[in-house]
Image 1 (cartoon, rainbow, N blue to C red):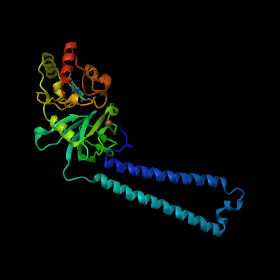
Image 2: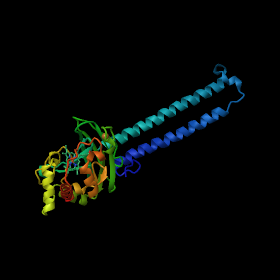
Image 3: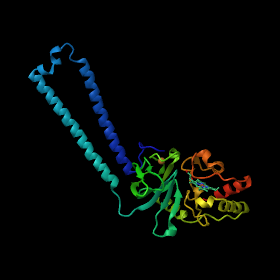
Image 4: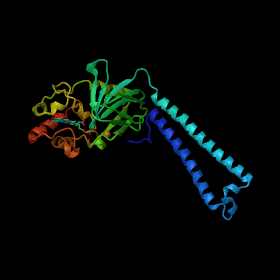
Length: 316
Ligand SMILES: [Cu+2]
């Protein structure tokens, strides 16, 4: 669900309200103007003398002046009302509590790095492309860009906010309806810009707290021999140069954090559903799915690939 027409936060409702009023009033004015144009086109046949404005009777002239002044006044009034309305919506969007759950989002070509802030560094939760938020609580987003300009846009929640290299922009919203809402990069950022989606998972606070607590714990270490082999393949064949998995030596941040990879619904920023078959396809040849992607295809023997995928499937 990726729709401005289905707001799920007070912020998105305010933006949608403003838009509908502008649309409605604009439509009524358009109807009026179109009706007048039709009227003018049909009226006045045979009244040759009134073609010449200099010879309009003073009575008619005064009437025309009154109509023009009234129209200008009405136009200014409508624009002024919308100006005030627009400012008030802007104020509402900027309103936020002193303290709020803060989520750091970094835009990369072409995925979203997500970190939940916590005063205790060991409780920070890192994930990617899928942002869980508690329903009924205002959440702050601190938005940064790692390479080029991106734009964070979850239309059911709030308007767009650009991510600009070297600058931190902020955005707030309070999800008030539980659900999964699609978001999308809204500023052209290169070849795979269109494949740079994300999801907002708005869930009841209790469920969210449980998710967050589980997020700071490392995944179950592998025990059976295939999974141990898969983990060795991961650590030794280059994956760990770019990815992190909690509780292991893999700590790199070039690509998405894979600690709880299997807990996410999609692979590569909404490009594929997170299934075993798709994960295998992805690792075999990422650029067949996302041409230009910043992840190389590594040569694996079938047994290695199979063990590697089995291991990644345990990262819940
Ligand atoms: Cu983009």
